[in-house]
Length: 141
Image (tube, rainbow, N blue to C red; front, side, top):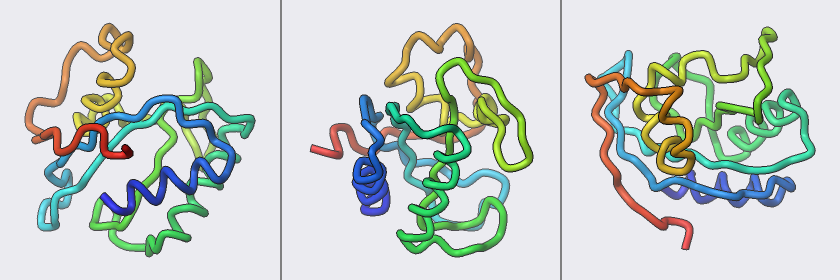
């Protein structure tokens, strides 16, 4: 949870206005299961940065917080993804918006729907096999 708190602090310091943030959810690993559980949260914010500038900022924050290169889907200190950017749709080599796999990830959909219930029509079905448990509410207070 410390990494999540630090990431929010860094996002705010970078000028992103955090409007909403979900509870933290404890999630079983996906794809590479022999690793510790993950803690996930989804936030909504406002920025003047472009999507690609957001991506660069997120990668910079991850590095600042100690993220190291490793196995894809493997353990990591922090992972900050851009899920949506208003109604924008884009596909470039470094970034696709909306996030191309978010509809497959219950650990994304559950916290997203907690803060943006109007997305329920877009995501009526959840991947049932993934274990997602609310871990902590109001964790930034």
